[in-house]
Length: 330
Image 1 (tube, one colour):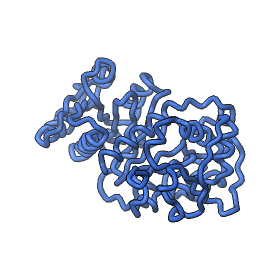
Image 2 (cartoon, one colour):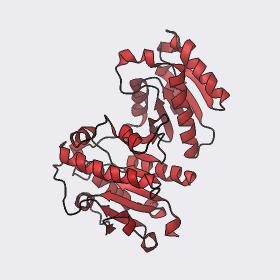
Image 3 (tube, rainbow, N blue to C red):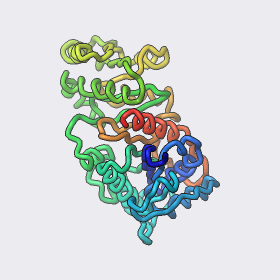
Image 4 (cartoon, rainbow, N blue to C red):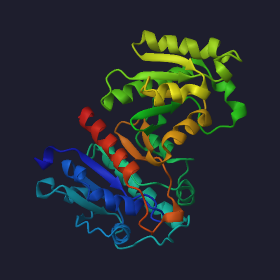
């Protein structure tokens, strides 16, 4: 039976933050027994996570993936250290921490391309350390897309209590947002969130689309771009609705449960609402990748690193989403 289970790679995250502690806590949760687990990283980093959490995760250690035999068990540690561990300091950004993350992530992505793993769930990364360690991209999503040869549209989804969000624009100045609000750019995240939520078990997701301008009326973008995109989505069979005024969109869609997700025009109009309702429960899904890739939406939390104060819930929810999507994709 173990050979027929889904293989999920767990990455420890930035070793200077709370990632190793969270993975240590996740490994004792019953849900991890339902799949084949391959933790990828440096063994001494997981040992530190175990020391912080007080857990004793007795994983079988291998140096190469092909040494794994899932008929002998479903929990393995793929040690990438090769006897040389990266030096890092708790609660500090460093090139060494970034290199550790990148080595584990690149290996996991290579295994995904070979179909040896079916999902990736990772502890929080630190973008600064990753760049210091050699990441040539501004974030991990674009690195993943490059490594996995993704040619189609991709974007980041954020999830709270199974309510999903997607953005038309992301990390750009607010002054550049209006010129990027075009029908062809709006329809892409609408289609992708529809397809991805179906993979997560919601067969006909109700997609709310935010306006750009106050009350959805003080401007031309709604009439010229957003409404035409919504109409096109409806023709494609997508249950799209809007545009909803930003100031009440989360009341309508999330609090009153009238929708399953929101597509917003720019970062803060979307993220401020989502974080107000569930900052401590957020999950990030890397949308458009060929396999499910998930992580808790919070950061490395240097202020509580090493103190056994990290809340497992967002990590647990991110693991559940990866498992559900991988199961439905299989």
